[in-house]
Amino acid sequence: MANGFNRGGANMGGMQNLMKQAQKMQEEMAETEKLLDDWEIVGTSGGEAVVVYMNAKKIIDGIEIDKEVIDPEDGEMLEDLVLAAILDGYKKADEVYKEKMAKYNMGGLGGLL
Image (cartoon, rainbow, N blue to C red; front, side, top):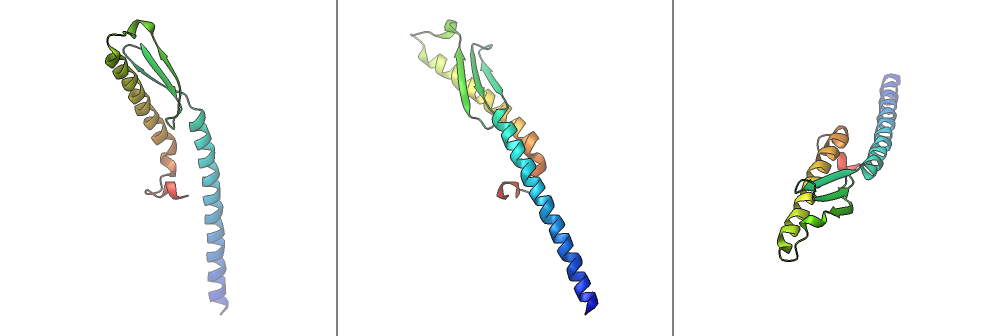
């Protein structure tokens, strides 16, 4: 009986260690999430005629448009430039997000913690 108890105790210690590691990973992940909130991404188009500012979670917080590209006769061009700058920012944000969150992926289950 003593051997069975010792094995159970060892397993319990291993489980506690695993839980501590999981808690530490969750804390680190929360810190990384905060970092991504504060990370500034700059998307551009038209040789920086349109600049979009966002964080690594793709929350846009500013857009700058060079007055030279504002043509009342060609609103579609300006729309295209804004969209291109947003997509450029999204691409950059995806790269940062993947890089910073890769260690928490855990075989696709990272988002479940």
